Image (cartoon, rainbow, N blue to C red; front, side, top):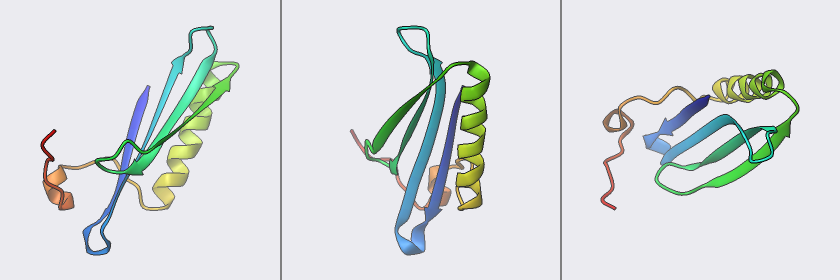
Length: 88
């Protein structure tokens, strides 16, 4: 299960993302991978292990709720956020 949230304030030059993903690792443990940073950059990662999928999903929900209280929301069209697509 993947969740992506964004926080954009073009007037403050603030364009950030927060992504979470619940999955299994190679050893069968459930993990919650968090990625965050400025939109268009690699950002940072953190991986936490959980004993069950329910625990991992509860942690994911709590983290996403905290980010939404801080102004993060489900992404909208990038043109509405003042960002243009970057050539790669």
